[in-house]
Length: 315
Image (tube, rainbow, N blue to C red; front, side, top):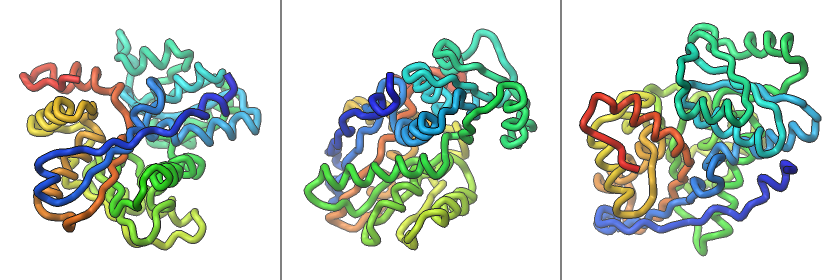
């Protein structure tokens, strides 16, 4: 399959959410359903891989090497794209190989991705690993963890452009979950100065602000100050959770027929509803939340994180 054809699909729909909390706060919430873009390559991974894959085709790279954890959405999506469009993929995985492979890595390997496992200390130096891989495998295209680079940001900018073309009015807020901050940077770069952008970090700490600003510094004519990142809803850090988060996700799915994941989108929507309940958004505000996909990780989350708990994510 040609790469351009793979990424040439209809735009994802926008769905309004109706809920008592939103009604009482006098705000409207819409969801950009990027989780529906592709069954295996959904959400921001589709956006971030699009222009990178086109560049690989343009430059004629025979292989792509990238990095991720054992349950990485990025590894899963990259392997799927490689299979569909005929790009040979290599995934450098943080940690030891264990048998049987979890669902994410098993899928990646079945897609043809070659998995290389490295220690956590070695994983921190991606440039060194890349040099070693080039010596062994020859000319390869480098894609950092999470697939975040300038081309990925270009793909994420299209989210705002699509929303503006789909809606009859401009939303006041864009909200997205944050891992590397690339999707957030794309929203900031494409939004106008009157719109506000909130990133809900999946990680604890404020380091993402500097990472996002660095990405924006590489863009022309971007001087917006109308954005912020909060880690108030990370529930203690990456992949950490509390029973109230799982309860919220399950209730959300039952009420609105939208599945959320516990690492990224579940925390974002929990945060949006909490902020609305606290009066953070002024009355008559319109919010668009980006559903960045990542649903493949739910199975592994249930198996690993909840195996000793009576709380289960029913999705």
